[in-house]
Amino acid sequence: MARFQIKSFEPEAVVFDTASGDTHFLPPLTVALFRMIQNNPGITVDEMHVALASQLSLETGPDLTHQTDEALASLRQIGLLEAP
Amino acid sequence: MKLLQLSPSDLRHQLAGEGVWLRTGPFSLRVRSRIPYVAEGLAELYGQFEVRNSHQAFADFHVELNPPTTFRRWFRPQVNFSFDGAEPFKPLPLDQAYPMLEWGLNWCVSMHAHHYLIIHAAVIEKNGLAAILPAPPGSGKSTLTAGLVLSGWRLLSDELTLIDRKTGLIHALPRPVSLKNQSIDVIRRFNPGAFINRVSHDTAKGAVAHMRPPRDSVLRQHEPARPGWVIFPKWQAGAATQLVPRSKAETFMFLAQNAFNYSHLGADGFRVGTTLIEQTHCYDFRYSELNEAVATFDRLAERRAP
Image (cartoon, rainbow over all chains, first blue to last red; front, side):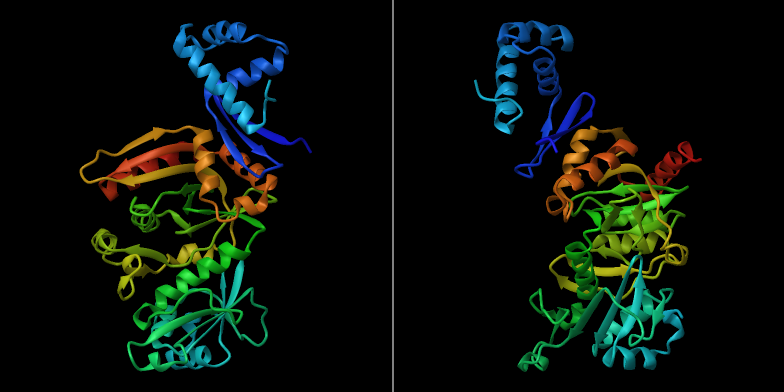
């Protein structure tokens, strides 16, 4: 069994970590970011900003950068992304 | 045989002796008690439930409510709840013996019936679909549940939503509906024909009484229902009736946090819970008038009627 079980309820998702027994809620931006990283291995943070802005109809800028950083941090904290 | 077929003296005699075997939904229980309040509550509220000779029938839960064997027997008398000989709760005033039976039975199910995912929520049914009503205390959940089951919805449970882990269906446990404080009079006014037993005052939840479950709900207690909706009710004085769609992912998170055994079930709890949410429509519901609330629920049921 995979460590993480993910169930998508568009545009959000929930994740069950079979290792810890914890359940996590992923808001829309975090879901979009996670999918983007899965589908584009090696994508840079700058490329993420541009792609997220386009996908979620957001403006690029400090707000989006901050939100992206927070979403990346939460994915790492959950364990869905490995720390760089 | 139904409990109402036992004479009051037979009921008291059996309760004080070998106990009364009762079937409530998928569970059987054996109740023993020498306390008149317990006999009175069972006679008034469980008349339509099946009883058997307790010597001949297996019981899932063996419970007993009796005074502690101390001087408190005479001075401010109390009641103890015991389950298989253990006493999981502190004693309560004797006046609270009947609510203690109901609370104790909820505890028995929520702590032991792990073949279900058990959510702390009321659940009712119409046209084969169940509406799950999770909500924090004070949200008007029990009042709404009582109003709906007095208006043609079937009571599955006012407190424990039992989701079968194999089938995803919701099983019924149509025991009496717990009413607290103002909701007791609200329901008396809503339907003067509803039977509500004596009020126990000054409990941890305030004044508490129980409403007899509708006969049809008891007769159909072995009939499960498909999940149809998850609706978060909120009573608010003067509020217009409003039903607003809510996030499925957030609804799942709330249910997981308010399930008695989600953590215990691990990945299977996640699977059962997400499958349930997938099948349901999720709403926030605000209301102040019970009649309007019932009409809104009826319209929901009509829209999804087979």
